[in-house]
Length: 114
Length: 110
Image (cartoon, rainbow over the protein chains, first blue to last red):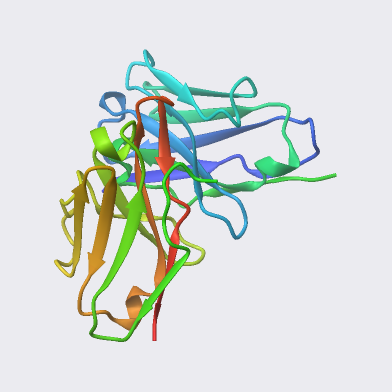
């Protein structure tokens, strides 16, 4: 069974940093691209970033470019999102999703507030 | 403002059919596959349709997708109260090098 479990969310002050993790199991993690998608309270889905299986291709939404860094450790079956210079508008539930968006984690809440 | 345009809400009676539109451009829908997602409050989205009109295993055939030019449509027949949810379209935008979602459509089954 495919499982994606996010962690690392929490409350952070504006300008602060946070690192999200996504632990994958039940499939060959190293052969699939992975994605981060977020959803602000009461709002729609917003794609954040994607990384190819071998990290050759990495993409970011304009809203996070230069502040967020996506990475992965195929040996640990894990996906990461390093978030720096956080802003109030980054407050959202962050989901990791497998290539094709057929599988999603349960999400982790990031709150940016003073 | 989303790159893909969906109606904010649609409604229909139980048993009826409803369609949800998703309008884009040649850089996204016009030249890439479209997916559709269903999301209930407080839960993660679920893939309903991929590659314009394919259903993952376990998705009832009441749900169908189509694409024409730069627009896509999700159709739901035999509406049930349990279909009340938010629905999103999504696709790759080749000009932006970004995945894009529609703004979402809230379905109400009256």
